[in-house]
Image 1 (spheres, one colour):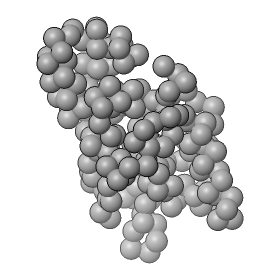
Image 2: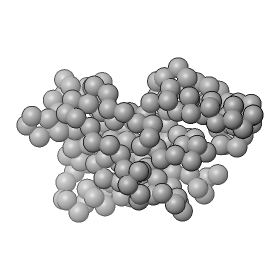
Image 3: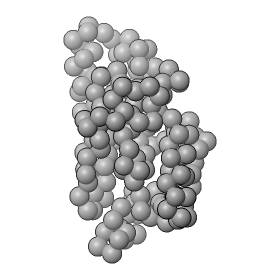
Length: 178
């Protein structure tokens, strides 16, 4: 599964290339990723609970897993789809894979309850157990059933799930107030 996983290292390389091309520091790039506001950047009060830090962004170079909502912010800054960081993904640059625009004061998040509902529907249609689905996807069954509670998920696991569903990651995102 790993050779077809979302690549955090490739994400880091793209972030670094964009940062260098623009001649900005990691701190400046991170401020931009955290979102525009009235004067160009969101106030620290509005971003505090969901703000990326430069170490979170640069950590994608070596981490095996990253929190999904932060990765979505990075992807939006790059104007890239999540699928564009999955080797040989057929839908990497299709219109349906593009991440949606987010209004000011909002952050793009995964709707994990919607992901779970889609998984459960396909699981039932295919007459599979959660363990069978988890084995096909390459995650634990508890990872899948946990999605029903809402909350957060991570990369690369979320991309394994949406690939199994044969849907773009963007189908499972929504804008949420900071």
